[in-house]
Image (cartoon, rainbow, N blue to C red; front, side, top):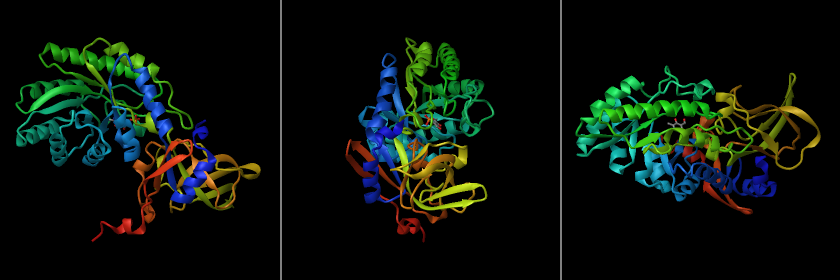
Amino acid sequence: MLSKYFKPGLLEKIAAKAGTPVYVYSAPVFLKQVRAYQKAFKALDPLFCYAMKANSSRGLCALAAKEGWGADVVSGGELYRALRAGFKPGNIIFSGVGKTPEELDYALKAGILFVNAESFEEVLELEKAAARLKLRAPLSLRINPDVDPHTHKFISTGKLGSKFGVSFEEALKIYVYAAESRHLKPVGAHFHIGSQVHSAGPYALAAGRLAAFMLKLASRGVNLKYADVGGGWGVKEGGEMADPAALAKAVAGVFQGSGFRVILEPGRSVCAPAGLLLGRVIYRKSGGHKNYIVVDAAMNDLVRPALYGAKHPVALVGAGRGPEKIYDIVGPVCESGDFLAQGVRLKEPRPGQLLAVYSAGAYGFSMSSQYNSRPRAAEALITGPAAWRLIRRRETYRDLVAAEK
Ligand SMILES: Cc1ncc(COP(=O)(O)O)c(C=O)c1O
Protein backbone atom coordinates (compact mmCIF):
# COMPACT_ATOMS: atom_id res chain seq x y z
CA MET A 1 0.00 0.00 0.00
CA LEU A 2 1.29 3.43 -0.93
CA SER A 3 0.45 4.86 2.50
CA LYS A 4 3.73 3.44 3.86
CA TYR A 5 5.60 6.10 1.88
CA PHE A 6 3.53 9.00 3.20
CA LYS A 7 3.84 9.15 6.99
CA PRO A 8 0.88 10.85 8.74
CA GLY A 9 3.15 13.09 10.85
CA LEU A 10 4.89 14.43 7.77
CA LEU A 11 1.59 14.95 5.94
CA GLU A 12 0.32 16.94 8.95
CA LYS A 13 3.43 19.12 8.84
CA ILE A 14 3.17 19.72 5.11
CA ALA A 15 -0.52 20.64 5.36
CA ALA A 16 0.14 22.95 8.31
CA LYS A 17 2.82 24.82 6.35
CA ALA A 18 1.56 24.63 2.78
CA GLY A 19 -2.18 24.69 3.46
CA THR A 20 -4.73 22.48 1.70
CA PRO A 21 -5.52 21.28 -0.90
CA VAL A 22 -1.94 20.31 -1.60
CA TYR A 23 -0.42 17.68 -3.86
CA VAL A 24 2.28 15.76 -2.06
CA TYR A 25 4.81 13.80 -4.13
CA SER A 26 7.49 11.39 -2.98
CA ALA A 27 10.83 11.63 -4.77
CA PRO A 28 11.88 8.15 -3.55
CA VAL A 29 8.69 6.57 -4.99
CA PHE A 30 9.09 8.43 -8.29
CA LEU A 31 12.71 7.29 -8.58
CA LYS A 32 11.74 3.74 -7.68
CA GLN A 33 9.49 3.56 -10.74
CA VAL A 34 12.15 5.22 -12.92
CA ARG A 35 14.69 2.63 -11.83
CA ALA A 36 12.26 -0.24 -12.29
CA TYR A 37 12.02 0.79 -15.95
CA GLN A 38 15.77 1.10 -16.28
CA LYS A 39 16.29 -2.35 -14.78
CA ALA A 40 13.62 -4.06 -16.88
CA PHE A 41 14.93 -2.56 -20.13
CA LYS A 42 18.65 -2.78 -19.34
CA ALA A 43 19.48 -5.13 -22.22
CA LEU A 44 17.62 -3.04 -24.79
CA ASP A 45 19.07 0.29 -23.59
CA PRO A 46 16.21 2.45 -24.90
CA LEU A 47 15.83 6.20 -24.55
CA PHE A 48 13.13 6.92 -21.97
CA CYS A 49 11.20 10.09 -22.73
CA TYR A 50 9.08 10.96 -19.70
CA ALA A 51 5.59 12.00 -20.82
CA MET A 52 5.36 15.50 -19.35
CA LYS A 53 1.59 15.62 -19.68
CA ALA A 54 1.23 13.20 -16.77
CA ASN A 55 2.89 15.65 -14.42
CA SER A 56 4.93 18.58 -15.65
CA SER A 57 5.99 20.00 -12.28
CA ARG A 58 9.61 21.00 -12.43
CA GLY A 59 10.43 19.33 -9.10
CA LEU A 60 9.47 15.90 -10.46
CA CYS A 61 10.65 16.37 -14.04
CA ALA A 62 14.09 17.39 -12.84
CA LEU A 63 14.40 14.00 -11.12
CA ALA A 64 13.81 12.20 -14.42
CA ALA A 65 16.18 14.54 -16.27
CA LYS A 66 18.93 13.82 -13.72
CA GLU A 67 18.48 10.10 -14.37
CA GLY A 68 19.34 10.76 -18.01
CA TRP A 69 15.76 10.56 -19.25
CA GLY A 70 14.45 12.64 -22.09
CA ALA A 71 10.96 14.12 -22.35
CA ASP A 72 7.91 13.61 -24.52
CA VAL A 73 6.11 16.94 -24.90
CA VAL A 74 2.80 17.75 -26.58
CA SER A 75 2.76 21.54 -26.67
CA GLY A 76 5.07 24.53 -26.82
CA GLY A 77 4.30 25.06 -23.15
CA GLU A 78 5.47 21.57 -22.25
CA LEU A 79 8.60 22.06 -24.34
CA TYR A 80 9.32 25.27 -22.44
CA ARG A 81 8.85 23.49 -19.14
CA ALA A 82 10.93 20.49 -20.24
CA LEU A 83 13.87 22.72 -21.11
CA ARG A 84 13.49 24.60 -17.85
CA ALA A 85 13.42 21.31 -15.91
CA GLY A 86 16.79 20.34 -17.37
CA PHE A 87 15.93 17.84 -20.11
CA LYS A 88 18.51 17.99 -22.90
CA PRO A 89 16.98 19.28 -26.16
CA GLY A 90 18.51 16.33 -28.01
CA ASN A 91 16.48 13.98 -25.78
CA ILE A 92 13.12 15.68 -26.31
CA ILE A 93 10.46 14.50 -28.73
CA PHE A 94 7.36 16.49 -29.66
CA SER A 95 4.10 14.56 -30.08
CA GLY A 96 0.48 15.68 -30.49
CA VAL A 97 -2.14 15.90 -33.17
CA GLY A 98 -2.32 19.67 -33.66
CA LYS A 99 1.02 21.42 -33.36
CA THR A 100 0.89 24.99 -34.63
CA PRO A 101 3.49 26.49 -37.00
CA GLU A 102 4.78 28.57 -34.07
CA GLU A 103 5.23 25.45 -31.97
CA LEU A 104 7.05 23.67 -34.79
CA ASP A 105 9.37 26.68 -35.17
CA TYR A 106 10.07 26.67 -31.46
CA ALA A 107 10.85 22.94 -31.45
CA LEU A 108 13.23 23.20 -34.40
CA LYS A 109 15.02 26.20 -32.94
CA ALA A 110 15.41 24.34 -29.65
CA GLY A 111 17.08 21.44 -31.49
CA ILE A 112 14.86 18.62 -30.26
CA LEU A 113 15.46 14.97 -31.22
CA PHE A 114 12.44 14.75 -33.52
CA VAL A 115 8.85 15.71 -34.13
CA ASN A 116 6.21 12.97 -34.08
CA ALA A 117 3.92 14.28 -36.82
CA GLU A 118 0.35 13.05 -37.16
CA SER A 119 -0.79 14.14 -40.65
CA PHE A 120 0.51 15.01 -44.12
CA GLU A 121 -0.53 18.62 -43.58
CA GLU A 122 1.51 18.79 -40.40
CA VAL A 123 4.53 17.38 -42.25
CA LEU A 124 4.14 20.10 -44.90
CA GLU A 125 4.00 22.72 -42.16
CA LEU A 126 7.12 21.22 -40.57
CA GLU A 127 8.86 21.36 -43.94
CA LYS A 128 7.98 25.06 -44.28
CA ALA A 129 9.27 25.79 -40.79
CA ALA A 130 12.53 23.96 -41.56
CA ALA A 131 12.89 25.88 -44.84
CA ARG A 132 12.43 29.19 -42.98
CA LEU A 133 15.14 28.15 -40.54
CA LYS A 134 17.34 26.70 -43.32
CA LEU A 135 17.65 23.25 -41.79
CA ARG A 136 16.35 19.69 -42.11
CA ALA A 137 13.65 18.83 -39.62
CA PRO A 138 14.03 15.44 -37.91
CA LEU A 139 10.73 13.70 -38.52
CA SER A 140 8.94 10.70 -37.13
CA LEU A 141 5.33 9.76 -37.88
CA ARG A 142 2.80 8.64 -35.36
CA ILE A 143 1.26 5.59 -36.92
CA ASN A 144 -2.03 4.15 -35.82
CA PRO A 145 -1.31 0.41 -35.64
CA ASP A 146 -5.00 -0.50 -35.30
CA VAL A 147 -4.49 -2.40 -32.06
CA ASP A 148 -7.05 -2.50 -29.26
CA PRO A 149 -5.38 -1.71 -25.91
CA HIS A 150 -8.49 -2.72 -23.90
CA THR A 151 -8.73 0.44 -21.86
CA HIS A 152 -11.19 3.31 -21.18
CA LYS A 153 -12.54 4.77 -24.44
CA PHE A 154 -11.20 8.26 -23.65
CA ILE A 155 -7.64 6.95 -23.31
CA SER A 156 -7.68 4.39 -26.11
CA THR A 157 -5.74 5.78 -29.07
CA GLY A 158 -4.35 2.92 -31.12
CA LYS A 159 -7.42 1.78 -33.06
CA LEU A 160 -8.24 3.17 -36.48
CA GLY A 161 -11.11 5.60 -36.02
CA SER A 162 -9.37 7.52 -33.25
CA LYS A 163 -8.09 10.99 -34.16
CA PHE A 164 -4.49 9.98 -33.58
CA GLY A 165 -1.79 9.13 -36.06
CA VAL A 166 -1.95 8.02 -39.69
CA SER A 167 -2.48 4.58 -41.21
CA PHE A 168 0.48 2.54 -42.47
CA GLU A 169 -0.67 3.24 -46.02
CA GLU A 170 -0.67 6.98 -45.50
CA ALA A 171 2.61 6.80 -43.58
CA LEU A 172 4.32 5.11 -46.52
CA LYS A 173 3.34 7.97 -48.84
CA ILE A 174 4.50 10.56 -46.34
CA TYR A 175 7.88 8.92 -45.72
CA VAL A 176 8.54 8.63 -49.44
CA TYR A 177 7.72 12.32 -49.82
CA ALA A 178 9.83 13.29 -46.79
CA ALA A 179 12.84 11.30 -47.94
CA GLU A 180 12.97 13.42 -51.06
CA SER A 181 12.54 16.75 -49.33
CA ARG A 182 15.53 19.03 -48.76
CA HIS A 183 14.07 20.13 -45.47
CA LEU A 184 12.87 16.89 -43.91
CA LYS A 185 14.85 14.02 -42.47
CA PRO A 186 12.81 10.91 -41.60
CA VAL A 187 14.40 9.44 -38.48
CA GLY A 188 11.73 7.49 -36.64
CA ALA A 189 8.33 5.88 -36.45
CA HIS A 190 5.99 5.96 -33.49
CA PHE A 191 2.85 4.52 -31.98
CA HIS A 192 1.06 5.11 -28.72
CA ILE A 193 -1.83 2.73 -28.27
CA GLY A 194 -3.43 4.25 -25.18
CA SER A 195 -3.09 4.67 -21.47
CA GLN A 196 -3.75 2.33 -18.54
CA VAL A 197 -2.76 -0.67 -20.67
CA HIS A 198 -2.33 -3.60 -18.29
CA SER A 199 -1.01 -6.33 -20.54
CA ALA A 200 1.97 -6.52 -22.86
CA GLY A 201 0.08 -8.30 -25.64
CA PRO A 202 -1.13 -5.16 -27.44
CA TYR A 203 2.42 -3.72 -27.37
CA ALA A 204 3.86 -6.91 -28.89
CA LEU A 205 1.26 -6.75 -31.65
CA ALA A 206 1.78 -3.06 -32.39
CA ALA A 207 5.59 -3.33 -32.17
CA GLY A 208 5.56 -6.24 -34.60
CA ARG A 209 3.53 -4.20 -37.09
CA LEU A 210 5.80 -1.19 -36.66
CA ALA A 211 8.99 -3.23 -37.13
CA ALA A 212 7.64 -4.88 -40.29
CA PHE A 213 6.73 -1.45 -41.64
CA MET A 214 10.15 -0.03 -40.82
CA LEU A 215 11.82 -2.89 -42.66
CA LYS A 216 9.56 -2.30 -45.65
CA LEU A 217 10.59 1.35 -45.62
CA ALA A 218 14.25 0.35 -45.47
CA SER A 219 13.77 -1.81 -48.55
CA ARG A 220 12.58 1.36 -50.29
CA GLY A 221 15.65 3.27 -49.17
CA VAL A 222 14.09 5.08 -46.21
CA ASN A 223 16.24 4.11 -43.25
CA LEU A 224 14.87 5.08 -39.87
CA LYS A 225 16.79 5.02 -36.63
CA TYR A 226 14.19 5.25 -33.87
CA ALA A 227 11.28 2.95 -33.00
CA ASP A 228 9.12 4.85 -30.54
CA VAL A 229 6.64 2.55 -28.81
CA GLY A 230 4.92 5.27 -26.77
CA GLY A 231 3.79 5.10 -23.17
CA GLY A 232 0.63 3.86 -21.53
CA TRP A 233 1.85 1.07 -19.24
CA GLY A 234 -0.86 0.75 -16.63
CA VAL A 235 -0.76 1.17 -12.91
CA LYS A 236 -3.50 0.07 -10.55
CA GLU A 237 -4.96 2.82 -8.35
CA GLY A 238 -3.55 2.37 -4.87
CA GLY A 239 -0.50 0.41 -5.94
CA GLU A 240 2.89 0.81 -7.49
CA MET A 241 3.54 0.12 -11.13
CA ALA A 242 3.43 -3.57 -12.09
CA ASP A 243 6.91 -4.81 -12.97
CA PRO A 244 7.54 -3.59 -16.53
CA ALA A 245 9.49 -6.80 -17.26
CA ALA A 246 6.56 -8.12 -19.32
CA LEU A 247 6.51 -4.93 -21.37
CA ALA A 248 10.29 -5.09 -21.81
CA LYS A 249 10.03 -8.69 -22.97
CA ALA A 250 7.37 -7.82 -25.53
CA VAL A 251 9.31 -4.86 -26.93
CA ALA A 252 12.69 -6.63 -26.86
CA GLY A 253 11.09 -9.65 -28.52
CA VAL A 254 10.56 -7.46 -31.56
CA PHE A 255 13.40 -4.95 -31.47
CA GLN A 256 16.37 -6.58 -29.70
CA GLY A 257 19.18 -6.85 -32.25
CA SER A 258 17.15 -5.04 -34.92
CA GLY A 259 19.49 -2.08 -35.06
CA PHE A 260 16.66 0.33 -34.28
CA ARG A 261 16.97 2.44 -31.12
CA VAL A 262 13.83 1.99 -29.03
CA ILE A 263 12.15 4.95 -27.36
CA LEU A 264 9.55 4.68 -24.60
CA GLU A 265 7.29 7.46 -23.34
CA PRO A 266 6.06 6.44 -19.90
CA GLY A 267 4.10 8.98 -17.89
CA ARG A 268 1.42 7.73 -15.53
CA SER A 269 3.23 4.58 -14.40
CA VAL A 270 6.16 6.67 -13.15
CA CYS A 271 4.33 9.42 -11.33
CA ALA A 272 0.85 8.15 -10.37
CA PRO A 273 2.02 6.15 -7.33
CA ALA A 274 4.37 8.97 -6.31
CA GLY A 275 1.65 11.47 -5.46
CA LEU A 276 -1.41 12.06 -3.34
CA LEU A 277 -3.84 14.91 -2.96
CA LEU A 278 -4.33 16.13 0.56
CA GLY A 279 -7.52 17.93 1.54
CA ARG A 280 -9.12 18.96 4.80
CA VAL A 281 -12.58 17.94 5.92
CA ILE A 282 -14.85 20.98 6.03
CA TYR A 283 -18.25 19.42 6.77
CA ARG A 284 -20.02 16.11 7.23
CA LYS A 285 -23.60 15.72 6.12
CA SER A 286 -26.20 13.13 5.27
CA GLY A 287 -28.85 13.41 2.61
CA GLY A 288 -31.28 10.83 1.26
CA HIS A 289 -29.54 7.52 1.73
CA LYS A 290 -26.03 8.96 1.56
CA ASN A 291 -23.33 10.26 3.88
CA TYR A 292 -21.04 12.94 2.57
CA ILE A 293 -17.66 14.23 3.62
CA VAL A 294 -17.13 17.69 2.15
CA VAL A 295 -13.44 18.47 1.76
CA ASP A 296 -11.59 21.54 0.49
CA ALA A 297 -10.20 19.64 -2.53
CA ALA A 298 -12.45 19.33 -5.56
CA MET A 299 -12.81 18.25 -9.17
CA ASN A 300 -10.90 21.32 -10.32
CA ASP A 301 -7.93 19.88 -8.41
CA LEU A 302 -8.44 16.25 -9.47
CA VAL A 303 -10.85 15.67 -12.33
CA ARG A 304 -10.11 11.99 -13.01
CA PRO A 305 -12.97 10.54 -10.93
CA ALA A 306 -15.49 12.74 -12.77
CA LEU A 307 -13.86 12.39 -16.19
CA TYR A 308 -12.98 8.70 -16.35
CA GLY A 309 -14.70 7.22 -13.31
CA ALA A 310 -11.21 6.72 -11.84
CA LYS A 311 -11.31 5.15 -8.39
CA HIS A 312 -8.68 6.63 -6.12
CA PRO A 313 -8.22 5.03 -2.71
CA VAL A 314 -8.85 7.54 0.08
CA ALA A 315 -7.86 7.43 3.74
CA LEU A 316 -8.11 9.69 6.75
CA VAL A 317 -4.84 10.98 8.09
CA GLY A 318 -5.06 9.96 11.73
CA ALA A 319 -7.85 7.96 13.32
CA GLY A 320 -11.56 8.41 12.67
CA ARG A 321 -14.37 7.96 15.21
CA GLY A 322 -16.87 5.19 15.81
CA PRO A 323 -17.88 2.47 13.36
CA GLU A 324 -17.15 2.69 9.66
CA LYS A 325 -19.79 4.18 7.37
CA ILE A 326 -20.10 4.51 3.63
CA TYR A 327 -19.27 7.98 2.37
CA ASP A 328 -19.04 9.99 -0.80
CA ILE A 329 -16.08 12.37 -0.69
CA VAL A 330 -17.13 15.59 -2.40
CA GLY A 331 -15.67 19.04 -2.95
CA PRO A 332 -17.07 22.58 -2.90
CA VAL A 333 -17.51 22.88 -6.70
CA CYS A 334 -21.05 23.47 -7.93
CA GLU A 335 -21.39 20.29 -10.01
CA SER A 336 -22.94 16.95 -9.12
CA GLY A 337 -19.91 15.44 -10.81
CA ASP A 338 -17.67 16.99 -8.18
CA PHE A 339 -16.57 13.97 -6.21
CA LEU A 340 -13.17 12.54 -5.40
CA ALA A 341 -14.46 9.13 -4.41
CA GLN A 342 -17.83 7.46 -3.98
CA GLY A 343 -19.08 4.72 -1.69
CA VAL A 344 -15.92 4.50 0.39
CA ARG A 345 -15.81 2.91 3.83
CA LEU A 346 -14.33 5.19 6.50
CA LYS A 347 -14.66 5.96 10.17
CA GLU A 348 -16.18 9.34 10.84
CA PRO A 349 -13.65 12.15 10.44
CA ARG A 350 -13.68 15.30 12.53
CA PRO A 351 -13.94 18.66 10.76
CA GLY A 352 -10.44 19.90 10.05
CA GLN A 353 -9.05 16.38 9.72
CA LEU A 354 -6.86 15.63 6.72
CA LEU A 355 -7.95 13.21 4.04
CA ALA A 356 -5.53 11.72 1.49
CA VAL A 357 -6.48 10.74 -2.05
CA TYR A 358 -3.85 8.27 -3.25
CA SER A 359 -2.48 7.52 -6.73
CA ALA A 360 -2.94 11.16 -7.67
CA GLY A 361 0.55 11.90 -8.98
CA ALA A 362 -0.44 11.52 -12.65
CA TYR A 363 -3.00 13.58 -14.54
CA GLY A 364 -3.89 15.25 -11.24
CA PHE A 365 -2.28 18.64 -10.99
CA SER A 366 -1.53 18.69 -14.73
CA MET A 367 -5.26 18.47 -15.51
CA SER A 368 -6.30 20.86 -12.75
CA SER A 369 -8.06 24.12 -13.46
CA GLN A 370 -9.32 27.23 -11.73
CA TYR A 371 -12.96 26.26 -12.27
CA ASN A 372 -15.28 28.01 -9.81
CA SER A 373 -12.42 30.51 -9.48
CA ARG A 374 -10.56 28.24 -7.15
CA PRO A 375 -6.84 29.01 -7.07
CA ARG A 376 -4.83 25.93 -8.00
CA ALA A 377 -3.38 23.77 -5.22
CA ALA A 378 0.17 23.89 -3.91
CA GLU A 379 2.63 21.07 -4.63
CA ALA A 380 5.13 19.64 -2.17
CA LEU A 381 7.91 17.11 -2.71
CA ILE A 382 9.04 14.67 -0.02
CA THR A 383 12.76 14.11 -0.47
CA GLY A 384 13.66 11.99 2.56
CA PRO A 385 12.17 10.35 5.67
CA ALA A 386 11.40 13.74 7.27
CA ALA A 387 12.41 16.16 4.53
CA TRP A 388 10.18 17.98 2.09
CA ARG A 389 9.98 21.24 0.18
CA LEU A 390 7.36 23.27 -1.60
CA ILE A 391 7.80 22.91 -5.36
CA ARG A 392 4.87 25.13 -6.32
CA ARG A 393 3.17 27.71 -4.14
CA ARG A 394 -0.59 27.83 -3.82
CA GLU A 395 -2.15 30.23 -6.30
CA THR A 396 -3.76 33.36 -4.91
CA TYR A 397 -6.87 35.33 -5.86
CA ARG A 398 -4.53 37.72 -7.65
CA ASP A 399 -3.28 34.82 -9.79
CA LEU A 400 -6.89 34.25 -10.85
CA VAL A 401 -7.06 37.66 -12.49
CA ALA A 402 -3.38 38.22 -13.34
CA ALA A 403 -3.88 37.80 -17.10
CA GLU A 404 -7.09 39.80 -17.30
CA LYS A 405 -7.12 43.31 -18.85
C1 LIG B 1 1.90 10.27 -27.32
C2 LIG B 1 1.81 9.88 -25.89
N1 LIG B 1 2.90 9.37 -25.31
C3 LIG B 1 2.89 9.01 -24.00
C4 LIG B 1 1.76 9.17 -23.23
C5 LIG B 1 1.82 8.78 -21.79
O1 LIG B 1 0.91 7.81 -21.44
P1 LIG B 1 0.91 7.27 -19.96
O2 LIG B 1 0.87 8.44 -19.05
O3 LIG B 1 -0.30 6.43 -19.85
O4 LIG B 1 2.18 6.47 -19.78
C6 LIG B 1 0.59 9.68 -23.81
C7 LIG B 1 -0.64 9.83 -23.02
O5 LIG B 1 -1.67 10.22 -23.43
C8 LIG B 1 0.63 10.06 -25.18
O6 LIG B 1 -0.46 10.59 -25.77
